[in-house]
Length: 224
Image 1 (cartoon, one colour):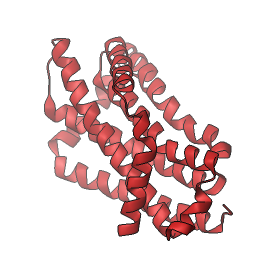
Image 2 (image 1 turned 30 degrees about the vertical axis):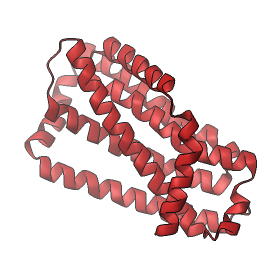
Image 3 (image 1 turned 180 degrees about the vertical axis):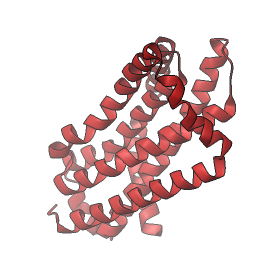
Image 4 (image 1 turned 90 degrees about the vertical axis):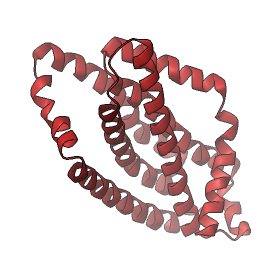
């Protein structure tokens, strides 16, 4: 575990130059525009989570470009430590993105003088976090199997399409009146938070564990 944590810190050092105030302001601006256009905080949360997910791919890109993967063995890092460390890094980035999305969405609602329902915002953020985490569970094995250059197009499609799909579907459902019946799902989750939380965590944990095992198997067979 200690080696996996060390590798996680190595990934953080890799992306640190990209964690700038300029990028944060861009995330906020895009999230605000999408939130104003759609009238819902879900799109803003989705946009920020998308940017967070992009950071997870940076270590793959940098490692492949500079041939760093072949050097991990010289650092006494097993392939198991590399895979576990990268999954821990992905979880940490996703968690930070979710917290940032929650804070920014709350601030945007206050600025726009709209009602702030913290419980609803928290549930929405958790749902989007689980969705993106599961989507990333499909992405990471592709990187470990094929490498960043070969896998990036297919791996990015779900993340780039999700915010746009939410934006378009929200508008369509509002106009058609279908959105109101679908509101029963989050209402049920709010009425049964413990059951909803347990179901969500169980689904998330199962998908992430399966993804981890696949990534480990692929990476052990891959020549680097």
